[in-house]
Length: 154
Image (cartoon, rainbow, N blue to C red; front, side, top):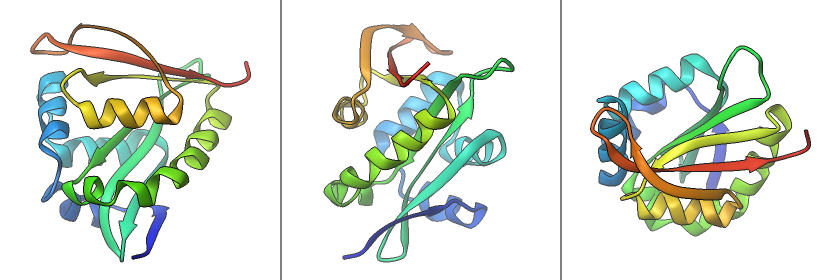
Protein backbone atom coordinates (compact mmCIF):
# COMPACT_ATOMS: atom_id res chain seq x y z
CA UNK A 1 0.00 0.00 0.00
CA UNK A 2 1.31 3.42 -0.98
CA UNK A 3 0.36 6.55 0.99
CA UNK A 4 1.00 9.98 -0.52
CA UNK A 5 0.25 13.59 0.33
CA UNK A 6 -0.27 15.73 -2.78
CA UNK A 7 -1.54 19.24 -3.52
CA UNK A 8 -5.34 19.17 -3.39
CA UNK A 9 -7.51 19.81 -6.42
CA UNK A 10 -11.24 20.15 -6.91
CA UNK A 11 -11.23 16.69 -8.55
CA UNK A 12 -10.52 15.19 -5.10
CA UNK A 13 -13.72 16.57 -3.54
CA UNK A 14 -16.30 14.08 -4.83
CA UNK A 15 -14.37 10.89 -4.04
CA UNK A 16 -13.78 12.15 -0.50
CA UNK A 17 -17.31 13.50 -0.01
CA UNK A 18 -18.75 10.13 -1.05
CA UNK A 19 -16.98 8.39 1.88
CA UNK A 20 -16.71 11.05 4.63
CA UNK A 21 -16.55 9.77 8.20
CA UNK A 22 -19.89 10.19 9.94
CA UNK A 23 -18.19 12.07 12.82
CA UNK A 24 -16.78 14.64 10.35
CA UNK A 25 -20.15 15.03 8.63
CA UNK A 26 -21.85 15.61 12.02
CA UNK A 27 -19.16 18.11 13.05
CA UNK A 28 -19.52 20.27 9.91
CA UNK A 29 -23.29 20.28 10.23
CA UNK A 30 -23.20 21.15 13.96
CA UNK A 31 -20.71 23.98 13.44
CA UNK A 32 -22.03 25.70 10.30
CA UNK A 33 -24.77 23.63 8.64
CA UNK A 34 -22.18 22.74 6.00
CA UNK A 35 -21.86 19.60 3.92
CA UNK A 36 -18.38 18.02 3.53
CA UNK A 37 -18.12 19.02 -0.16
CA UNK A 38 -18.86 22.65 0.80
CA UNK A 39 -16.17 22.54 3.51
CA UNK A 40 -13.60 21.28 0.98
CA UNK A 41 -14.60 23.81 -1.72
CA UNK A 42 -14.33 26.63 0.82
CA UNK A 43 -11.01 25.22 2.06
CA UNK A 44 -9.58 25.16 -1.46
CA UNK A 45 -10.69 28.75 -1.97
CA UNK A 46 -9.48 30.35 1.28
CA UNK A 47 -6.55 28.25 2.52
CA UNK A 48 -2.87 29.04 2.17
CA UNK A 49 -2.07 25.37 1.62
CA UNK A 50 -4.38 22.43 0.90
CA UNK A 51 -3.37 18.79 0.53
CA UNK A 52 -5.06 15.51 -0.29
CA UNK A 53 -4.02 12.23 1.27
CA UNK A 54 -4.04 9.32 -1.17
CA UNK A 55 -3.83 5.60 -0.55
CA UNK A 56 -2.96 3.69 -3.69
CA UNK A 57 -4.06 6.75 -5.66
CA UNK A 58 -7.49 7.00 -3.97
CA UNK A 59 -8.27 10.28 -2.13
CA UNK A 60 -8.92 9.54 1.57
CA UNK A 61 -8.68 13.00 3.14
CA UNK A 62 -8.26 16.70 2.40
CA UNK A 63 -6.69 19.12 4.83
CA UNK A 64 -5.17 22.56 4.94
CA UNK A 65 -4.68 25.77 6.86
CA UNK A 66 -6.38 29.13 6.34
CA UNK A 67 -5.53 32.51 7.79
CA UNK A 68 -7.70 33.38 10.80
CA UNK A 69 -7.71 37.08 9.99
CA UNK A 70 -6.18 40.05 8.24
CA UNK A 71 -3.36 40.54 10.74
CA UNK A 72 -1.85 37.12 10.08
CA UNK A 73 0.06 34.94 12.48
CA UNK A 74 -2.90 32.68 13.29
CA UNK A 75 -3.89 29.79 11.07
CA UNK A 76 -6.97 27.60 11.19
CA UNK A 77 -6.08 23.99 10.34
CA UNK A 78 -8.92 21.85 9.02
CA UNK A 79 -9.41 18.33 7.73
CA UNK A 80 -12.08 16.19 6.07
CA UNK A 81 -11.48 12.46 6.42
CA UNK A 82 -13.03 9.30 5.05
CA UNK A 83 -13.69 5.88 6.48
CA UNK A 84 -10.79 4.69 4.30
CA UNK A 85 -8.45 7.01 6.20
CA UNK A 86 -9.49 5.49 9.51
CA UNK A 87 -8.71 2.00 8.22
CA UNK A 88 -5.21 3.10 7.13
CA UNK A 89 -4.44 5.87 9.64
CA UNK A 90 -0.98 4.58 10.55
CA UNK A 91 0.19 5.16 6.98
CA UNK A 92 -0.44 8.90 7.44
CA UNK A 93 0.53 9.55 11.04
CA UNK A 94 4.25 9.95 10.44
CA UNK A 95 3.71 12.16 7.38
CA UNK A 96 1.33 14.45 9.26
CA UNK A 97 3.93 15.86 11.64
CA UNK A 98 5.93 17.24 8.70
CA UNK A 99 2.85 18.94 7.26
CA UNK A 100 1.92 20.43 10.65
CA UNK A 101 5.49 21.76 10.93
CA UNK A 102 5.00 23.45 7.54
CA UNK A 103 1.73 24.97 8.80
CA UNK A 104 3.45 26.34 11.92
CA UNK A 105 6.14 27.85 9.68
CA UNK A 106 3.36 29.77 7.88
CA UNK A 107 1.40 30.62 11.03
CA UNK A 108 3.13 30.66 14.46
CA UNK A 109 -0.24 29.92 16.08
CA UNK A 110 -2.54 27.18 14.83
CA UNK A 111 -6.00 27.02 16.39
CA UNK A 112 -9.46 25.75 15.62
CA UNK A 113 -12.33 23.79 17.15
CA UNK A 114 -13.21 20.09 17.01
CA UNK A 115 -16.57 18.54 17.87
CA UNK A 116 -16.22 16.83 21.26
CA UNK A 117 -17.98 13.77 19.77
CA UNK A 118 -15.29 13.38 17.10
CA UNK A 119 -13.09 11.05 19.18
CA UNK A 120 -10.84 9.95 16.30
CA UNK A 121 -10.02 13.55 15.33
CA UNK A 122 -9.30 14.47 18.96
CA UNK A 123 -6.91 11.51 19.31
CA UNK A 124 -5.15 12.51 16.08
CA UNK A 125 -4.80 16.15 17.20
CA UNK A 126 -3.38 15.13 20.58
CA UNK A 127 -0.92 12.76 18.89
CA UNK A 128 0.24 15.66 16.68
CA UNK A 129 0.91 17.75 19.81
CA UNK A 130 -2.04 20.13 19.89
CA UNK A 131 -3.13 21.41 23.30
CA UNK A 132 -6.83 20.94 24.04
CA UNK A 133 -9.16 23.22 26.02
CA UNK A 134 -12.31 22.15 27.85
CA UNK A 135 -15.40 21.55 25.71
CA UNK A 136 -17.91 24.39 25.41
CA UNK A 137 -20.99 25.03 23.26
CA UNK A 138 -20.03 26.35 19.82
CA UNK A 139 -21.66 26.63 16.42
CA UNK A 140 -25.19 26.91 15.18
CA UNK A 141 -26.46 23.93 17.23
CA UNK A 142 -24.61 24.70 20.47
CA UNK A 143 -22.90 21.28 20.49
CA UNK A 144 -19.81 21.10 22.76
CA UNK A 145 -16.63 21.74 20.81
CA UNK A 146 -13.03 21.70 22.02
CA UNK A 147 -10.65 24.49 21.08
CA UNK A 148 -7.22 23.13 20.08
CA UNK A 149 -3.99 25.07 19.66
CA UNK A 150 -0.34 24.70 18.75
CA UNK A 151 2.23 27.45 19.07
CA UNK A 152 5.46 27.65 17.15
CA UNK A 153 8.03 30.39 17.41
CA UNK A 154 6.51 33.84 17.77
